[in-house]
Image (tube, rainbow, N blue to C red):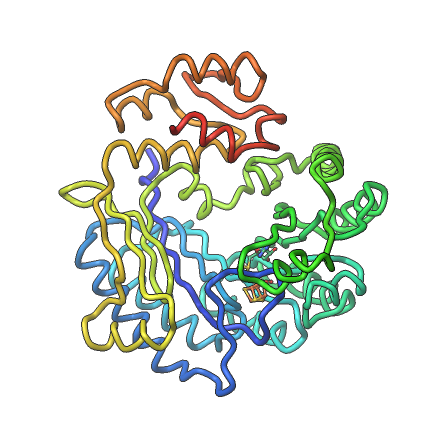
Length: 382
Ligand SMILES: C[S@@+](CC[C@H](N)C(=O)[O-])C[C@H]1O[C@@H](n2cnc3c(N)ncnc32)[C@H](O)[C@@H]1O
Ligand code: SF4
């Protein structure tokens, strides 16, 4: 039997510029951060986490951000070495780095590969220059396509991200763009609907009536196009926004969605560690400099560290697992919470075609259910 999943997430919190839709923990700094100092802090927090959660075999590492492709390959190498120093790493471990597709960053791809990265996730976002400008991106289509080509030559595995439901986007235009993307794609694509997050410049623009994105019905049409085009190309959705050739799913993200164990390292990283007294939900300081000082003083940058109640674990299993096409294991829900899902709510959602039963005692969202997943989960979790 293969080892249980143990995923290590490492957050690099800096970007060259802040995109107007983004509410991730990403910061722009006038002076470039001291990468050696950050690398030492990452190594220290990895050591502390491994002391709390020893004996695991690492099955995946994900360097996310922010913009991890602003890291020097030596910084990436130091982080990967620190992980391998404190836990055994499975020989087939998936090691992903998120990269932005500017030409400067592409120059570092070979260095990342030499450091041990075997999968790249590229933030392409759009395949037309007008929409890239609207999204506030620093790259153009030419650079994105060149970065895709270089990444395909450099890494055994490649995924890229696109954002759709952009203002004025028609199903026909999206179909063309997605087909073009699929001709360039390797075995995995992440396709996100544009979300207007509170506190972002896009939120303010929408409040001021200066930004209109497709309404629910237009978004549903674009979502239907997404499923149809990707199914036809052999990359069905295995998660609400993620498509892959079967077998090429992102193992790291699957660990979150299957509610396995994961460590979160770096500013604003979240973890779920199964310790003697239960499943711990950990989160570190979000501000990079505050995190750095905390790690240097205390060995970790933890801001919160809470043992989850059975009810909270059950809610998280639903929240994460129903994003997956495979759904959740109802017996596992029962084991975690000591109870079954509310029968009346469940039968109501089954009757409305929002969820369905699947083989092996599983429950999964239907396509209609996926489109209103937040409401489905809220209903079941209440
Ligand atoms: C945290 S970003 C990191 C990747 C990299 N920094 C980049 O932007 O290219 C991960 C992905 O989330 C998606 N994303 C971020 N904010 C979003 C939003 N408000 N709506 C939809 N997708 C979003 C983008 O596709 C992005 O590539
Ligand atoms: S580059 Fe990525 S992480 Fe940075 S601000 Fe833009 S979307 Fe957010």
